[in-house]
Length: 234
Image (cartoon, rainbow, N blue to C red; front, top):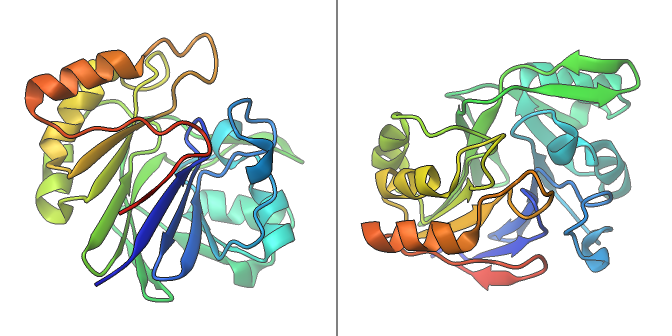
């Protein structure tokens, strides 16, 4: 049986440990007003997975990859941007939606998401391919990080195919779906536990956990709020 741990670093930054592999999904740490300082410099990190290029998701990636030697998995366009920003090409794993790669026994699969994507780097703001979500799985444990997205009907298919143990869903509204839509996504995904992300970071993100909880309760969806720095075993 697989062992897994999730640590929430605030906004959309999530650390996962599956079967000893340490993974950071959208690990925006320095500059993230919700990230505890104790998480700014992870002692070790094996893999970074990016859902898209916006600075509040990918803006800390080059620093982290340089400091830890972590590999980076991302859509082709964003992966090539990471190489252009100085990450060694042998540390970059280009992929795309529908594709799956195995990383030390952990499966990484990119899914669809409805959002934009650009990267602010040494060459200014450049197009970074399409935004995506990610399924990360090992053994009986399956994690779904939706990235930034609107509600979309194919979440039903993601649920049918992957039946995620945990779904991490943006609820902040304005730039992503809000609490009610995220609860609907959780129901369609048939997830064992729904965890909200991408909220409370800035005043423009008005979605609340309280509203998400009410909407999940009305649908019979298990949910839990993780405060930045909190960890749970899965």
